[in-house]
Length: 347
Image (cartoon, rainbow, N blue to C red; front, top):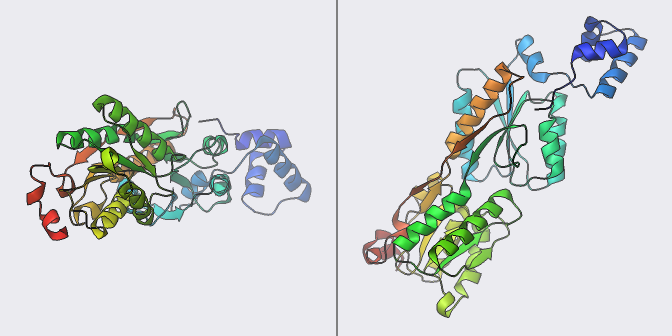
């Protein structure tokens, strides 16, 4: 993490005492010329008061922001629960923000953290840009990223391997007797969309099966239903007997569309999702899904954040959570699919 200018350097450049700098930057009264010199020096150095240190020094509650793309996605609910678990016992308050899809807004959000509305940040961006990476590296408060911001970026990061997760899903479906496995992905311009597409194409090379990619415009149930229409239009040798979806919400949309069209699951179509959200266990048929450890990633992010607060000068760290496959009814082997409870209910 890039070294931040200190109050000592501001005082030296302004030609005033550290106490004077503290008074001006904390909003207390000071001589007009002193205020002007301090603020000019702080601006020239790019100094932003340490909101975390200020909060702790004043004995106030540490406020941690969790910024995610869409709070309506249940995977982020599980991540939030993990962050709360990791912060347990600290008295910290967690504030959740839905940042949406606009990268410019997200960059502005990170750069505006020095205004005091949060003392630290856990962020899980779906997209990245040079401007966002720069804002994270130079954030005025400690930051932990849950996701991929690129190699060598000096920011604490919790990562998983969704590419490997898609490989797990594909190998599982091949093992159940499926041979025409389509992939319904979210936007390929996002970090997960890009990694999951790469994993699927790698899996097709490994298995020798022909790839069939349908790209949805979002990682949502509605987008999954729309994508199903394109999957259903495939015919002949391209007609899939299985679908891997880019996340659970897309998988639910595909399953809803397939069931509405009279397709029997999993006898005629097996489906596997990614994220293993709580709804995967209650959908009928229950959804086989790749767990990327959302709750565990949230907990580890909180622990990294607390460690950063305790040791501000340490080198940035990356911790990883490995994917695992949770097998349920939606991908029963071809031989067994006729006996799957979900298949009977949907026929």
